[in-house]
Length: 437
Image 1 (tube, rainbow, N blue to C red):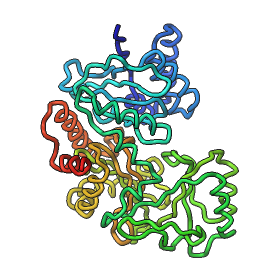
Image 2 (tube, one colour):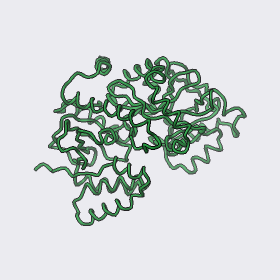
Image 3 (tube, rainbow, N blue to C red):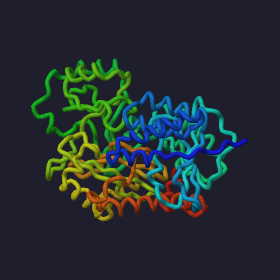
Image 4 (cartoon, one colour):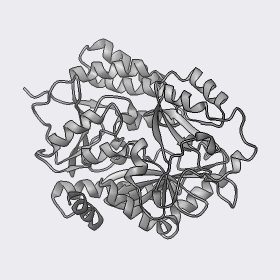
């Protein structure tokens, strides 16, 4: 007998509550009560795992998620429309919030119903595929997901319904291979990250100076070249500074800028991981105001849309640490970026974005990027799992809603066109032909 899906509150609603200042204690009590009252409330366990992740309780969250998935692998969002225009099935894997594309944010409050099917190592094989019109491969690239993506590559080749985002293309988005993947694109510079073990990092530090050079903070970076070609230097001491982070980390976890051997030893004392990503620091401050600008651009069917821009005097720019709420000038700058995207930022980098899209070969993904002093697109990361949302308070960010709705509408159109068998957008078709060649 086919197991009926259980209904989730879902990550989008839970994260929205947290984003607006709710401490989630009332929701936690409700979910704990449901679990206590019924040993088979897998949806409550899965929702509770999201709450614990947002509260920083990773191990407990993953344990609750595993308990839920052992009981149930098919879920639907409680707020789904009664008579949807399209039913989309997100194929997901177990793991942290960023292990899968947060598709819930993209289909909130519309005529599309979202169902989720969890697959992966340790989970029972799925014998009955839930009814749907279009599937969306939500599993994101990571070391732990590479095997699952390989398995899905074979499975999706004979999937009975149309699907979006090919697993083999998602698997190529590893941060430490992106520079080689995008090599040779005019107008693009890619941060040259490579994977090193703990011992390798400590060994390389022996070549580093014991004190930073007096002009290191202002030096141009010597270890990358134009058109995306990277040159790793044998002696790390030739670069003014290096960016180090634990392998597979996101959202700034364990991310530091290091200039000396002493700083590295201090870092390794507090970071227990065995593998790290290491990249030369590139000074991408604006020559006009000295601020760092980090852009997020979403690509839907080959067309680029602005998702957000954060700016800060600090080199490590994340939207949540960039004083966007407190600083009206920052919001005005973001509003200008979004309002003028089609004829300013998007137009400046249109050729570069189109060339990147042809390489990536996905119908939906996002780019985190900046601009170099000489006007090239500086790519930090490309993935299918970045949070693209409309949670910002309208009273402070009124300019964002129209742009996010435009992006969401494009994504809804992608789902509907794929489900109904209509021709995809021209860029996407061309990309598919090139990838098949």
